[in-house]
Image (cartoon, rainbow over all chains, first blue to last red):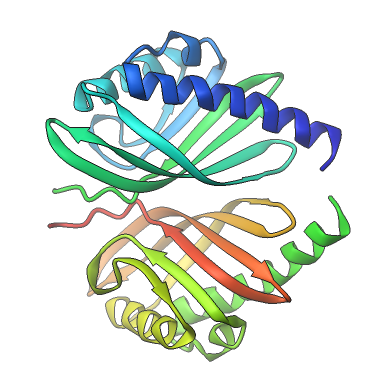
Length: 130
Length: 130
């Protein structure tokens, strides 16, 4: 692993820890502080479907996530694949979705630039109902 | 990138090309020939939900995929993240699903061992109806 890759991995892992804390406890400020101003994220469904730009949108999105999982969602990392700019976490998630048992697998990609998370892409495998 | 990582990436990219050919044309033998005997794959829904083991199951699965997309499905690679054992392709897919327009994004992970694909994990973002 090159020095740039190792640094990217470390930054992404620190950010991922804050991300997990957000999911578990609904407290997102530590994670939001790690996002770049030009932060973008892509989500597959619902009011944030498609590409979203900016930290304000991110704040609104993650607050919505915590409303859907008020008791918190726990992630377990299965595998990490990374290079100098991107880190992909394959995870299992477990919790209660609006009170009902919820279990899923997901791939979560962070792009890292200048020590910040500049992009977040989630591939959810969640079963949505149209 | 280390030599092992470069070799893994090359093998995965060759396999991915055969995978795309299978999706586009329904002809899976080239891809299936790249799978190890202990090949496993994980899928989020339907008759193959969960972890599946063995090349026979893989053959049945990919033939089912081609029945769902009889006119073929086209993948466009957005981003590749890899290390010495795993390659993650983030893709867009486009085609007709049982005759209806279908567009999606997905993360597809290949694990490589001894020059073969030994594991395949798909994170689909598809909207399934329960």
